[in-house]
Image (cartoon, rainbow, N blue to C red; front, side, top):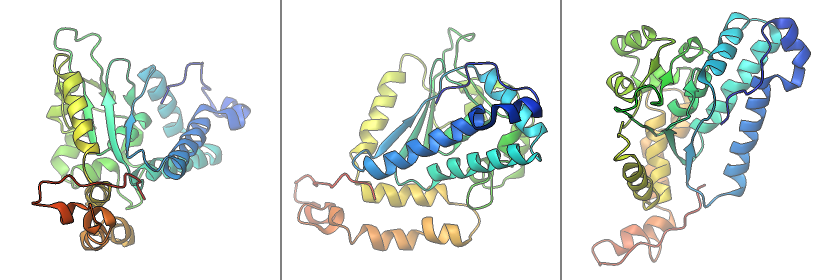
Length: 274
């Protein structure tokens, strides 16, 4: 995902003049197209690696404009499309890893991409603090992009605990390096530049070696771990996924994991994600 490279509108009049070419609307439209294309046409690609590039300040400036004018009809509808598009990541049966490396701009709205992922790997550069990749919380992360469960991704991540969420609100707008983000619980792992390549490689290889059916069930349960509603019943209820997983050929087929368990043979998986 690329941050805006050109000068963005600074008021409602210029937003309306940009029309369908306004950057946030283009972003939502193209991201949704990419997600739906990958889900429909690339069934054997079970892992998506989410990266960002560009100027985080540009992302935050555009977020501030949207937050200020969020009740204007055009801005409101664009925020709604972004919300629905980010939600498509939550309900995609794929493993999602965010890689916060050099040149990243996971800030504000772009941070939602990382928060929707199963894991966030954040590069630490202790010897080069000025070039170390950072993540930045914005106002829009605290209510403008709720999940289908009607909770923010931060609320879901921290189980609605007041202490951690208050600590996050206190650092809105601050660029957080890997160690500070890890201290606040905003990333999964913060390897330094010596270990980065190996840790990311091992994590990816480990994930793609597992049964895609089992991963779909596990990921759905972890993504929808908050309050119970119809969405969690459909996407995140453990018993439903168990019944589905253990009846699939990847579990009980001739070369399924349960059939070859204890025999010294390797399971043969159908890698298509459904």
